[in-house]
Length: 176
Figure (cartoon, rainbow, N blue to C red):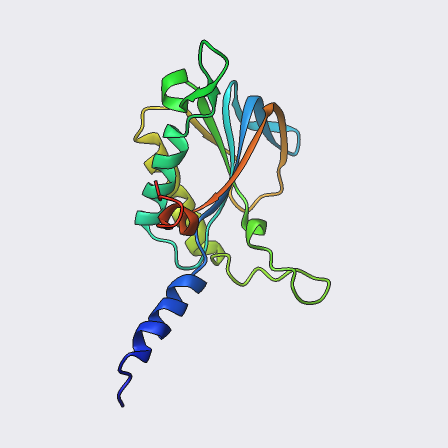
């Protein structure tokens, strides 16, 4: 069987359709996660990160996203401009696993979560992502994977940013 030039098109389609690590990042004055009323994670100023883990995600994806999160300059400097990173401000992270970030609502009334990683992979990969974030010598708190949680926050700004690794790798936007 010969693919010729068509193999490049097929590979491009496979790459483009790949679900990325997806996060919602919120700059907060404080954030807390409770399970049945018990506090399991709490931070002062920093980021609340809702993290969606996809089926095909790899350590490379987690490292790319972690690098972007800790260096993203959305904290105010002395002049009131968003020009300082989490690392520069000494902020903390509260990271909560959120498979529903992969909801596909295009068909019917019930969302599909087919692109979200299965629980076993998602749990292991979430732990890997947390360990990579901790390599930056910042305080990282989490919720509890696979558990119903109450997340409370005071959004600062408000600043809310949605990112995924597919966008970060994009050459049209300059990448990371």
